[in-house]
Image (cartoon, rainbow, N blue to C red; front, side):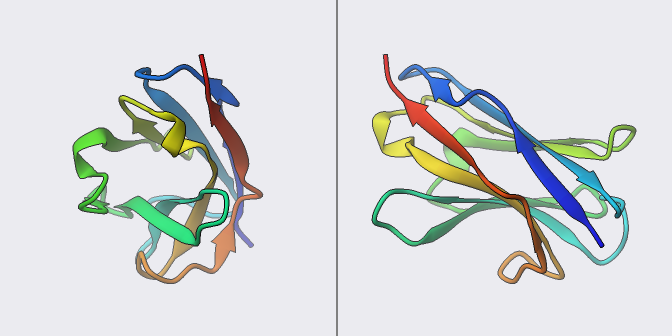
Amino acid sequence: QAQLQESGPGLVKPSQTLSLTCTVSGASITTTPYYWSWIRQSPGKGLEWMGAIGWSGDRFFNPSLKSRTSISRDTSKNQFTLQLSSVTPEDLSVYYCARGPGYTAYDYWGQGTQVTVSS
């Protein structure tokens, strides 16, 4: 079974870049045919898919966030990383990493990490 664990700062200042890492165990991020996604949930809102990186390294992004989002991976560490630039208080959310056979369905999730944007 795959296990995913998010890590990163819980507090980011406005206009800065948020960087979160998902460390995966029990599965390889290069195994077909899986996609590794970042998803967030803001207070009072539903889940929002942000983007994903596929087993081959291809990247896919939510069009509404594409201009501010990048996803990378380190296969030697079995990790993938989210960077969200120019954050505002509206980016306050719980951020999750997840695995799925596509990037709209998920079979394993991390526990989530709370990120606050404040000066």
